[in-house]
Length: 255
Image (cartoon, rainbow, N blue to C red):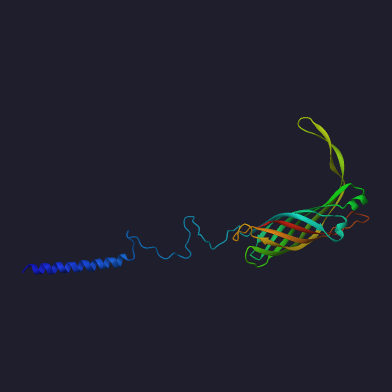
C-alpha cells in the first residue's frame, strides 16, 4: 500500500500541470504564437519619425497658398474707344497668394492689342496701325463658396497702364536665303506713334471648372471684365485718343 502516496502525488502533479497550462493560456491570450504583443489600436495622430510623413497630414505645405493664372482671349472695345480701336486679342499672366478658400490677391500683367478702324486710318492718312495696352495691376479675388467641380469668383483692381497707338505703312524689303536666292517682299514700318502712361481699373468675374479632378487645385477658367483706362484726349499740346474702355474675355488655367 505504499504506492498510494505516490499515486496521490502524481494526481496532485497532474492537477498542478493543468492549472499551470490554464494560466499560460490566459497569459498568451494577449500574445501571438511568436510571443510578440498583438498590435494595439493605432494612434489617431502618430508622430512621424525618420523623415516619414503621415498619409493624411494635418498641415499644409508652405507653397500650397501660392496662386497663379495664365490665359488669353479677345477683347471688344466699347463706348468712345470704338472710334480708335476695334476687336483684338489679350494675354494675361498673374501670380499671388490665396489667404484662404474665399479670399486671394494677384499681381497681374496683361497685354491687349487692337486694330485701328479703317475710317480712322483714312482720316490720318496711314495705311495701317494698331493700339497696344499693357498693364501691371493688383487684383483681389473673392471666390464664391460652392461645392463640386464648378465654381465662380469676382475680381477687380487697378494699377499702371501704358497705351501706345502706332501707325504703319508697308515698305519693300529685299529678302535673301542661305543659298543666295533673293526676292522682294514687304513689311510694315512705323511712320508715327504716340503713347501715354496713366492709371486704370478693371472689374469682372468668371467661372471655374476642376477639369483635372475634384481634389486638384488647378482649374480651367473663363472670365470677362470691364476695363477702363484714363488715357488723355488730343489737344493743342498733345496727341491722344481719349479714355480707353474695353471688355477682355479670357480663357485659361488658374491655381
